[in-house]
Length: 126
Image (cartoon, rainbow, N blue to C red; front, side):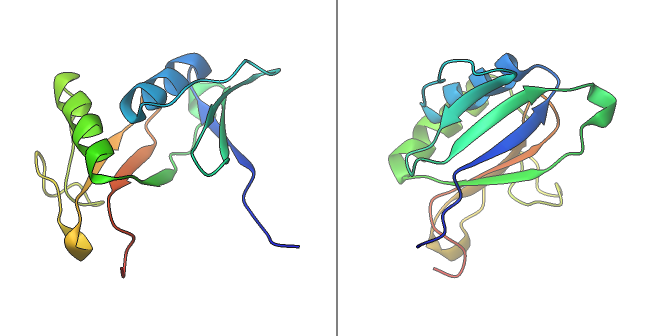
């Protein structure tokens, strides 16, 4: 049997707001609400299940998404249209820039609950 990640739960201040934010930026669909979860399904079948919890209980996590160049153009355009602060690096020392690591493009930005989101067009080391 091969091992695959099937789903993960992402804590959020507002599960619908966070799911819609990510789905809008990446051009994805939101699945039907299931219990306390609002799912966003990725192309490889992995589901991100957003769950509302008290804000004080949220530990910021990092989520990186490998996307195509065309998807990057669309997503980065949305980031700028929405006025989202973005950086070229995970240490947030290069504001208003993107990176070109491994011959691709990458950008870091926060989601509504404070998680660190990253978009890349090439896998690291690739």
